[in-house]
Image 1 (cartoon, rainbow, N blue to C red):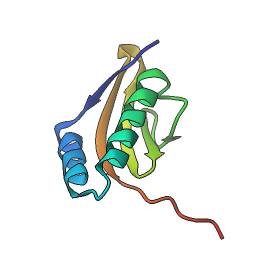
Image 2 (image 1 turned 90 degrees about the horizontal axis):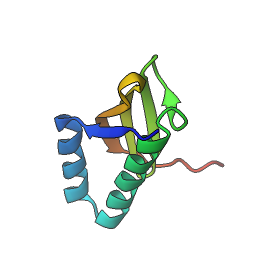
Image 3 (image 1 turned 120 degrees about the vertical axis):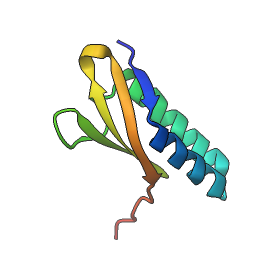
Length: 89
């Protein structure tokens, strides 16, 4: 089943700000596209659950907070931020 992915106005604005300020805009664009693709096909199989419907997905260099409305085949992205993967020592 395919899900519709909607970005809240706040998330869209944050993504634009991140993209404008990025030294590598392609990296941001590619990560946002991967997020869209994953959430449109397997939103409950990626990321980590936070509440019954809310989830967190980290796709470096971005992370998103989103909700899945399974009965409507809908995913709503509420927030996005830059995420830097930590190195393990």
